[in-house]
Length: 150
Image (tube, rainbow, N blue to C red; front, side, top):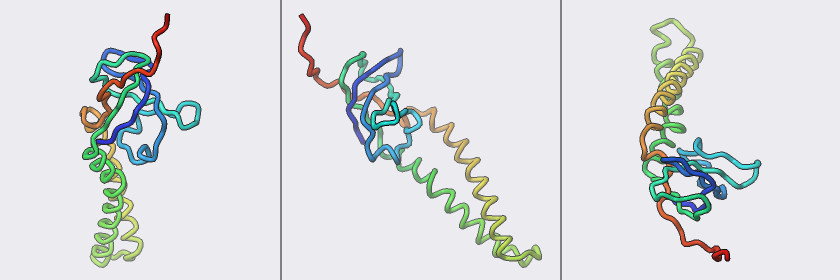
């Protein structure tokens, strides 16, 4: 499980928005759609399920599972490439039977399968977004470094 630390800036009944610093793990994160860059800098605002009942101002640890991250990364990055290659091979093999130029046929079949893969990914992405395991969660509340006010 990947974890990050941050500070809760607002909450609602189910979620907390945490201010954290963008790391290199953000580039491949399946939940990056739930995050927003604040002011174009390195600070990020992450929406996470508030499973620890954190309150505004709490320092928290948020986490997301790596298994679903790898699954979604494969779906987004590798699946369209496989579709392109499969389409190109099918186009190459079918060209003589369809009296088409093999190169043009490979290109048409390849792009057609990439188009179909994008439609599939969009549909599958909406299904996966509804599952809790694809969302970051507040794992625990960290001890406060603040001194009590008098």
